[in-house]
Structure formats: structure tokens, C-alpha cells
Length: 359
Image (cartoon, rainbow, N blue to C red; front, side):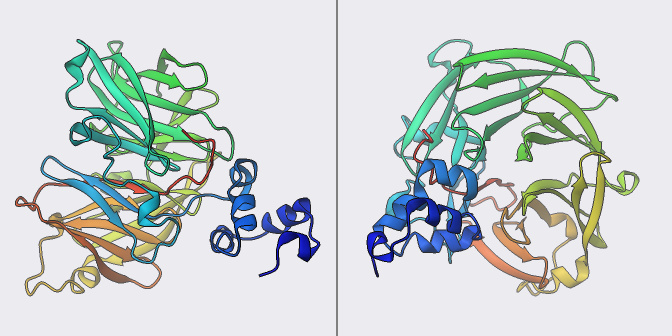
């Protein structure tokens, strides 16, 4: 392979070419030469054009935790990323809360090392670096992480708490790595409700999103530090807590009942208009399972969206399944070794950060 000098292409010309290629092609081109690898991986370039690709799922419940790799992922080699998180102090006590663009947010179960303070950690498994944060411990429903290397090399942590002012208010604790400080805030909502305790926060299009009871998504704009409620589609027919996630740069919502599973995409933030993308008969999904007896539909849990492709991850007993929405194909993604197969997994789709400026 010719070097950059022999090819007579300037660095600026290569950047212009790379900027017009899809992310998957850029990741492959990093293998062409050391020069191309360094150029594509450079923070200035990657922050602008190279979103990370999914490499696997971090999973955790009361009995088991670990990392399930995407089998065909060539984003990082096993030696490049410490998925056991052994570089963390007392990593066995680390509880995952959220992840965003290559960074993980969690807290230490033994948080009474400093009385009345909760010990949070933001870490990068690819660089094996971490930052500790401490905040007065309060019961909070969701903790979310915001890190977008295409915009900034700083991150934010947001805690969503109940408010003493009533059910139409939400208290927020916001940490910025740029200032190194926590800021407390209270926002008002147009209706009363309750955040889902221990739910997943999803970063998409400059905002954190969390499920707000059965009928709404709470959207927290990071720049404006303001909240709004987005009504979920067909709220009157909802009987289960669904799942939100980013897929293809757009917020998605999935829910199901005994007869069908529906996948919606939020196409317009101005009108809060949802588009129905897929409607799957539960009978068609269940009969793909290898078990001789079809399980009850309530055995399924929707746990995460694949951020890059049209795939939804589900849990059924002790298995994590991947359902390919375009081909309607259900596959076994990973099988647990836990003794209590009824325990639901908290999962984080993880995309390792290639930005040299991250942690």
C-alpha cells in the first residue's frame, strides 16, 4: 500500500474524502495503513464525522454482570478494551447506570466510604481511565450520561429525582466535567406523573430521554437545561412499560402486548410526531424460538435498541435475543449462566470511543 506521500494527496484532501464516506467504511479504512489510522482516529476528525459503532452489550442484574460482544464486530480487538472493568477500584462493586458514546457511568455499591455521599464513576474501557464524582445521596429514579465527541470533549451527568414540590415537578442534579461542579435545578412539567425507577436514559439529538410512567417520554435539552413531555403513541392501549433507544440517529420506542409488538420512531421534534415503522405479530415472533412450548408473552422484556442497525434486543428468561426488524429474524445473542433466569438484565449498548480526547 502506497504511503500518503507517494499518493500525492494532501492531508486536507484526504479529510475531505473521508468526510464523505459512511462510518463503517471509515472504520475499515483505519486498517489500510498507520497513516490512515492516525488520520481517521485524530480527535478533530473523528468528532466531526465518525460516530462509534456498536461492539457489544454491558449487562447487569443482582446476580450477574459482564459484557456480550457482537460476534462480527471489528471495531476494537479484545486487547484494546477492558470489558471486565478490572481497572476500576473495587470493580466488583461497580453498578452500571448508563453509557454514551464510549463512556460508562456507574456507582459503587459501597458508597458509604464517604458518609452520606454517593460515589459515581465515569470511565472509558478503551483507554482504561476513570473519573470519580461525589454527590449527596438522594433517592433518584434515573442517572444519565451525556458525551458527544462530535460536539465537545466534555461530559455531563444528570440525576433525575422526585420533587418535594409535587408530581408535576422534577428535581435535577447536573454535573459538568468542564466546570467540575454539580448544579441543582427544578423544572416544571405540563402534567403529573412518575419517572420509572432504575430506567434507562437515552441520549439522542442533543437531549436525554427517560420514560415518564406509561404515557410520556421526558426530554431534557442539554444545552437549554429545560424539560418537555413527549406523548407516546397510542397511550390508551398500553399495558406494559416499553423501551426507548436511539437507532440510526433517531429516538425509537417499542412496546408489545399478547398480540403484537410495535416499533415507532420520533421523526419530528417540533410536532412530536411518531411514525410506526414495524408491527410484528407476537405469534410470528414466538414460533421462531427453539423451545417446544411457546412461552407466555409476558416472559419477554424489551431491553435495548441497536444504535446502528434495525435490531431490537429482548430478554426471555436467561437469554438475550436479537430481533432483526427488516428480516423478521430472531436469533440467540447470548445465554446467561445465572441460576435465577427470571432476573431482568439492565443493559447498555456500548460503542467504544476512538476519540483521543475522551477521558
